[in-house]
Length: 147
Image (cartoon, rainbow, N blue to C red; front, side, top):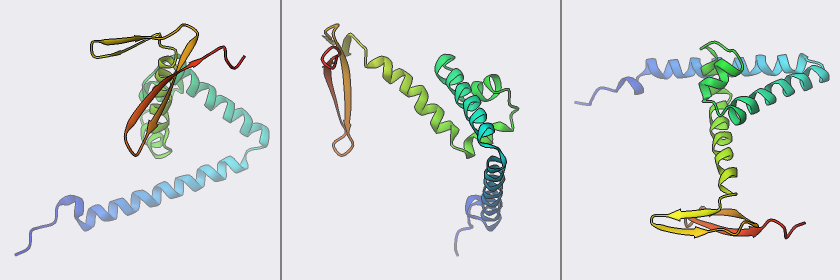
């Protein structure tokens, strides 16, 4: 006797996935159509507004994903899923981590466990990551060398 399929593998759930995907595709087409209906100047104004608010919420205010949606943009809870669908959540996380990363580049001391390495005030840190070996390399760069 075969085991019953779980709810996640059921035909009903698969149908819901299909409906959801179709709904996303329809919304994307509506968004593209709306964008294309705007004049060039309206597109620039919209781009400016969105980008400056993302910068304000993510970089200046260091707000959470919800903070940017609800406080910075003034959206209602229905915006949460729209933000997920348009990939704003991973973008928010990248921006948030990037602000921290930028600060790390100006560190003047590196601590690993009980060990400390002082960095020359004339240097910043440069990081590289080897995906294959999973090795992080940190080197110092003279900030006045390029001037």
